[in-house]
Image (cartoon, rainbow, N blue to C red):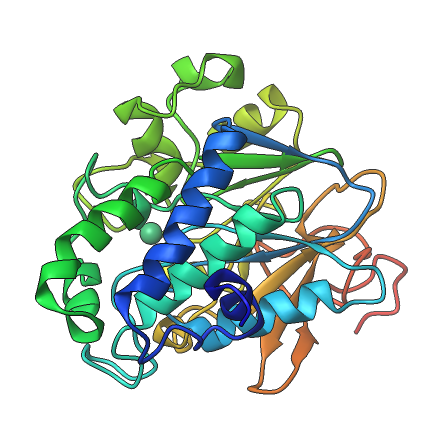
Length: 335
Ligand SMILES: [Mn+2]
C-alpha cells in the first residue's frame, strides 16, 4: 500500500476516517523534509514558468486541490504559491461547524504533503492564521476540527505538530519578473531590505501577515494601513512592481493602487466578498510584469477555472496589456 503522504497528494480526502497514525506519518515526513532543507523568510521564484497563486482558503480543500491540479496539469506545469490562511473557519457553508467538519486538517495536511514533496514547485507562505502562537487570531478552530476527527488524546500533540510545521513556512516570495507575494501587506520601513528579515520578528510578521491597504481599512488591532505611495516605494525597494496578496476579503478580485495590488481569496467562505468567486491569479512567464493587468484572474465554477476580467480601482490608464478592462482605449474609439 502506498504511503499515507502519497495517497494524500493524490486525494485530499485520503485521511478522512483513517486513524491518527496516518496523519502522524504525513507530519513526520513533512518534518523530515523541512529539516533536510531549511527554509528562508523570502522565497525567490524564477520566472521560467507561470505561477498560480491562491489566497485565503480556510479549510476549503475542494477549491485548493482543484487549483493545485489545475496548475500542475497545464501544458506548461505552473508553480503554485499559497498566500496563507489554510486553517481555521473551515466551511463551505457558514457558520462552523459546516459541510467540511475538519476541512482545515485535510487542507493543511494536503498542502504540507505537496510542499514538502515538491519544494521548488509548491510554495506555502504563512498567513496570520499560521502565526497564531506569535500573534493570536479571533476564533481559531483547528483544535476543534482536530477533535472532530481524532481521539481526544491525539488532539493537542497533533495541533502542536501542525502549528510547529506552519511556523517554519516562509513569509513572502518574489518572482524574477517583479511580483511580490505575501499574505497581507508591507513591513515597517526598517524591514525594506529582506536581507535583514528574521522569521521570528513580531513587527515583520505584523507588517507582512496582518497589514491591509488603507482603503476601506478595518482595524484588526494589529497590522497597519498602507497607501499607494508606501506600497510603491516598498515595491521599488525590493525590485518588484506588483504585489499579490490575500487577507482582506472585501478586496478579493479587485486590483487597487493603479494596478500595483491584487487581492485573491480561494474559499467558499469568501465567495460572496469583494468581486465574488473562488479565485486564483496567474503570473505569466514573461520577462517583466508591469502591473496587475499583466496577470490572469480565474474563478472556479465547481468544474473549471474560468478567466475573468480584473476590476482595476482606479481604472488603469492606457490600453490594457492583459485581459480586457473596462478602461476606454486611448485611440479615440470612445467605447
Ligand atoms: Mn488573514
